[in-house]
Image 1: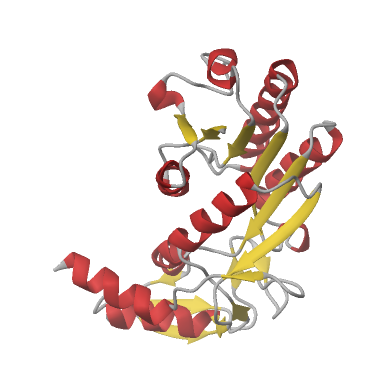
Image 2 (image 1 turned 90 degrees about the vertical axis):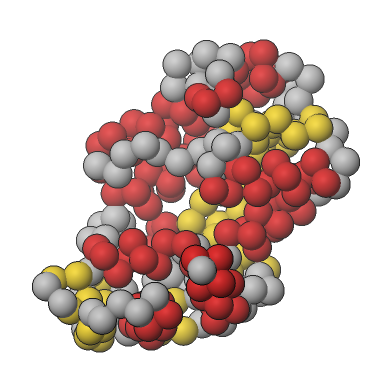
Length: 252
């Protein structure tokens, strides 16, 4: 089966392409780096020629509210139109658990807009919503730092390893379209302040973590449902402590 991965050279895309090829599929890594651009349409018809499935894991190059919305809407419209012309039978997209619950977050609003375009396209689809990646915890800590303190919410958080996200995407991509949304999360729900505390301890970072129920997460105040999945999500197998240990080993 020919599967085109939009954003196929990024963190998730590169892992997904490798996973699909190991399963025996023809997986094409499509990104501006490989001559495929969903904003300009460069290389898009050629990449989708003969494709059975398209998996969109492209990430916006900017996070400013207006720009990120324009990216996902333009990219989504161009990609879906090209898929319709090529006769693609299954569109898979990676999105974020809790996107509709945090409307103050411009990136999350843009992902909801992307999802709405997919649902209205008429192309059979599957949307996989994932919780935040372990790889993003350092950035979360940095965004919440003032001086030597990291003020973060103690709301529940259920992050996941990017390897587990890629594995779940591969399973969704080779299965029939669900024409709906499925969720994937890490195996453990842990308060966000504790996740950040463990990360800093593991990296020998001396900043102090201060739990604050009013602390904003990229513009939004959190509760225990904000960034955790609903009932019966798929669960990854990699625990945060194991991922930290592996990251420490790799850094040595």
